[in-house]
Length: 302
Image (cartoon, rainbow, N blue to C red; front, side, top):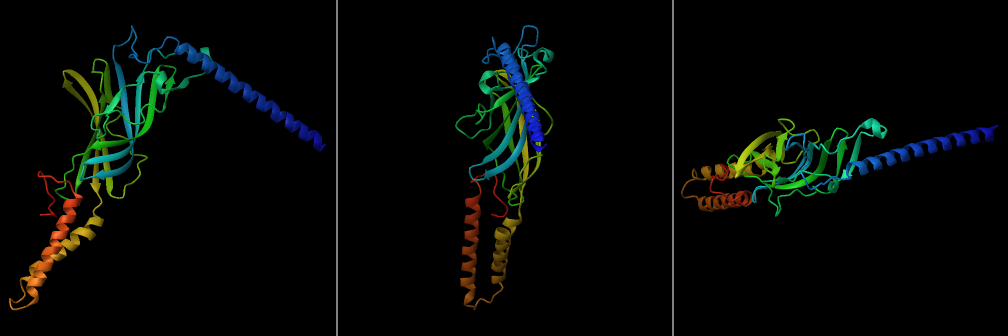
């Protein structure tokens, strides 16, 4: 009886595996046929425009800020980990779902479809093109909608204002747009008035309060559109209060008290010289930490 039951279970699972394999194989065959049909005469180097549609492409853009890796105040360079999300419609990549057994999407390599030549205008790297742009796969829906999402690490220029250090708030810009196509070909616009901070990893030094987006149109012999994201972040000041502000205030107070000592006191001169050297050390520490700038100087340094 037990052997019969075991044989029945074995046959049941064998039939189930065969059905699943056949279903998977059929789906792969249909997807392959769909891929051949879509890309038979497709040219990924040309703009995805059709004779009956508009002669330009609308590209939606959104970014998710994953991490503030580092803000180098001295070199004024911000390093961030960002997820970039782009979407547009390609009129040449449409099909009827019922003709392909319910297949409603495809995932293809970067080189197979047209992808916007998006660039970071504020990049501090040698190239403005984004690292990792060509390393991932695009998703195509049956109505021609294309989604291309990829993670990357940016090194961008960020002008730092240190007047109120260590209680300062910085606003760093990330400006995205096409380097080759004007507004007559590509039109960028943000998905929402703000970026995505849902998966942001808290930084030890900076608190990000907002990630806002703005669409700009600028004339560079032709009209070009770009989307500018502003990262608003405030410095965590507790560490600097304990290691810089409090000792500096204490040394300054001792310097003032030193003048109350009688002039015949032998320790008065040595005390004031020691205080002067201490203040010079604090000034060197602050100057070495912050960017050399004649526009603004921290009140703490003054």
